[in-house]
Amino acid sequence: MYNAKISGLGFFVPENVVTNDDLSKLMDTSDEWIQERTGIKERRHVIKGDDTTTSMGVKAAKIAIERAGIDKDEIDFIIFATLSPDYYFPGPGVLVQRDLNINTVGALDVRNQCSGFVYAISVADQYVKSGMYKNVLVIGSELHSHGLDMTTRGRGVSVIFGDGAGAAVISREEDTNKGILSTHLHSEGQHAEELSLIAPGMGKRWVNDILQDNDPNDTSYFPHMNGQFVFKNAVVRFSEVIMEGLNANGLGPQDIDMLIPHQANLRISQFVQKKFGLSDDQVFNNIMHYGNTTAASIPIALTEAWESGKIKEGDLVVLAAFGSGFTWGSAIIRW
Ligand code: COA
Image (cartoon, rainbow, N blue to C red; front, top):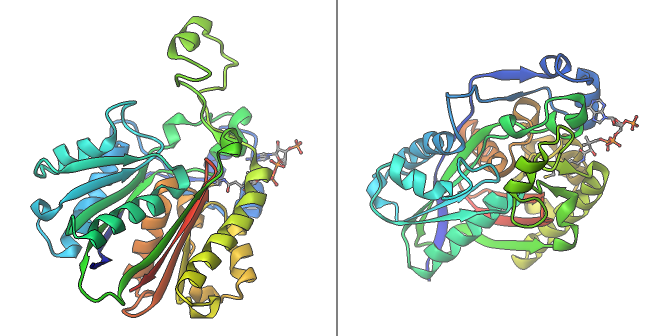
């Protein structure tokens, strides 16, 4: 058995900054409301034609591969986490294989929304630990902005989400005390519809239904979120899964050097920080600048934390996520 470590990190966000005031010109909202409830000041939106979920992922991946100090052809496997793929099918994993011109390695798409990156890291970890692969490219990328209802009707959701991508190379580590120590994954499908996008799908709303009805009041193809219910579950599950990861390694909250929570809402991160008695230096948040970028939020935050020197060799880094499904998970990493 080997261990798996994060050997390279990168992120990409579109240049176009959209402030809360910009949104208040499109819908009945305000900078004050958004900041007070979510902590978000601005987010990035792709200008149509500039980028796609895949192209942002590719840009982030190129940086991560370079920093890992490997050639693209040393990538043995690709895992792509997103809820906003370029196409209904095929998924973006194969588009990355094509656009990076990598050998015909396997490409897997992960559909676990805000927990997507933690799920993807967990899969990569198993492949590397077992010895099957040496270098796995993991990408989380989202282009939300063009799928949101940018009117007052959709304001409860659309002010929260932003576009961007993050990537990590997961590589073989001979020292079994270093790298990813453990990952912990959960789901509770009972609440699937509480944070969901129903159509088009082969369940409740078929494409043909939408075309036939041609109903301007149809919101089935916009994301739906029961915000307060999601919030209440998130604070409980974040705390549980962080504690589960720490316990599995004989560690406690005092051992955490850096917690990177999925950037769902600053109030959720602050609740978790308080619960575990962590200082501002022990928790990294950047939701103020990017909003919630779903599967991209952890790799973007992890990259920024690492780039700014906040993560050093030997540090205990904890990744934790919660989101649609519901799904949640954590990764405990010795850097
Ligand atoms: N601007 C202004 N008012 C808004 C608004 C906006 N963008 N969005 C909703 N409102 C209004 C509502 O219409 C409602 O008005 P009413 O009282 O007249 O009906 C009021 O604000 C309160 O709405 P509510 O949904 O109860 O607000 P909230 O305090 O729960 O905050 C969220 C909403 C979405 C910010 C909050 O529930 C949240 O962050 N939930 C978790 C979301 C999350 O983390 N999602 C990602 C998980 S991965």
